[in-house]
Image (cartoon, chains in turn green, brown, orange, purple):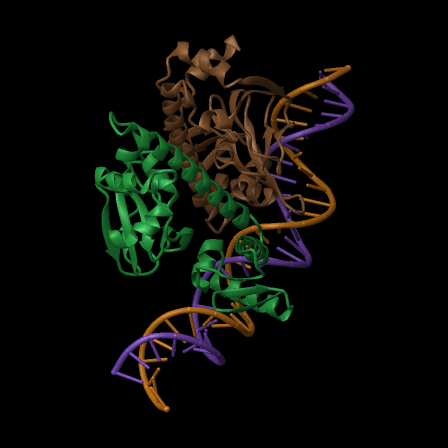
Length: 219
Length: 219
DNA sequence: TAAAAGATATTGAATTTTCAACAAAAGGAG
DNA sequence: CTCCTTTTGTTGAAAATTCAATATCTTTTA
C-alpha cells in the first residue's frame, strides 16, 4: 500500500484531505488492493455496483459487448483515476458494462456505501470526500458527453478527426499518444476496424496526419 | 413560486429536506423562476456553466448542433428533474451543449456555487444537498450510458429497437409514449429521419410494433 | 536470427445509410 | 369544412459502412 501513497495523494477523491487523515480513511473505508492480468474482468456486467475502484497501476476499460459480440469501449481509466463510482453512487443493481484490465493492473477497491453516505463520526473528511466525489462524477459526465459528441458524427472520418483533435487539445500538442490500438480505437469510435485503417491511410496520403502505432501527429 | 412547491417537494435534490427548510433554502440559494417559449435557448453552448436548473413545467433538451447543422439530442428533461448540474458541478468554463425549451417551459435556476461548496452555517442541509446532488449526477451518468448503449448499435433498426425496448421497460408496459417526434427521435438516435421512418414502416409491416405518432406498442 | 504470433493495412462485394425530392397524412386556423 | 402548415412516409441514387479474406508489417519468443 505504501508504494501507492503518492498516487492516492494525487487522486482527486482525496483533495483537501491531509495525508495523515488519508491513512486513517483508507483503514476506515477498509480499502483493499487487488491485481489483475491484462484482459481479466474486474467487474462483470450484471453485477451489483458496490465498489469504487481506484487505478493504481496499469489501466482499465469500461466495455460493453453486445448480442453478437460487437465490442464497444466506453472509457479508458488510468492512475490515479476512479472507476465504477457513478454506478456505485447510483446504487445500481446491475452494472451496464464490464470493467476489464487493459494492462497488468493494480487497483484499490472501496465499499461505496462507506463513502457516499454520511456516518456519525469523522464527519469532516466525510463531507469533503462526498464533495470530491461529486466533482469526480460530474467530470466523468463530461467524458461521456465527449464520447457522445465524437460518436454522434456520421462518418468514420469525422469521428476519427473529432477524437484526434480532442486528444491534441488535451495533450496541448500536435503530437500525442492515444491509449488504444486500432481495434480498440474502432471499438471506441463505434466503427469497423478495417474501415478505420483505410481512413487513417487516406488521411496520411492527404498529409493531414502522420502516425506510427498509437502516436499521432496532426499536420 | 408557491404553485411549484409540490414539484420541488418531489425533486430529488431536496430528498430528506423538510418542507420548512426547503423554503429557507430556496431563499438562501436565491433561486429564481424563469419562463421560456418552445424553441427558446435557455443556456447556449460556450456559456459558462454557473446554474443548476430545475424543470417546473414543460420540458427541456440538451442538444448539440454541429458544423453543418446536424442536430443531436443528448437528453430530454421533464419536471421535476435537474439540468446543467453536471456541468456546473464540474465548474465548466464552456458548455458543450445548448439547452433549449422543448415546450413552453418554466424553470428554476440556482447558482451552483451555493450548492456545491460547503458554507459555514446551514451545514446540515448542505451536506444532505450535496449528497443528493451526487446521487442525481450519478444517475445522469447512467442516462448517458444508456444513450451510448443505444447509439453504439450499428444499424438504424437496432438503435430504434434498443431505444423502444428500453422505453417499454421503463414504462413497464408494451405500450408507451416517447417524448420525441420523428425528427427528434432521429436526432436522439443519431440517424437519418427518412431512414428512421422507413425502418418504422418495415417493423410495422413485420408486425413487430404498432405506432401512432409518439405512442408505440411492441407486439 | 528465424519463425511465429499479433497488429495493421488493403481490397472488393454486399449491405446500409444518407440525401434530396416529393407524396401523403394529420393537425390547426379561420 | 376547407385551406394551410407541419409532420410523417416513400422512393431512388449516391455515398459510406460493414464484412470477409488476404497481404504486409511489427513484435515476441524460441
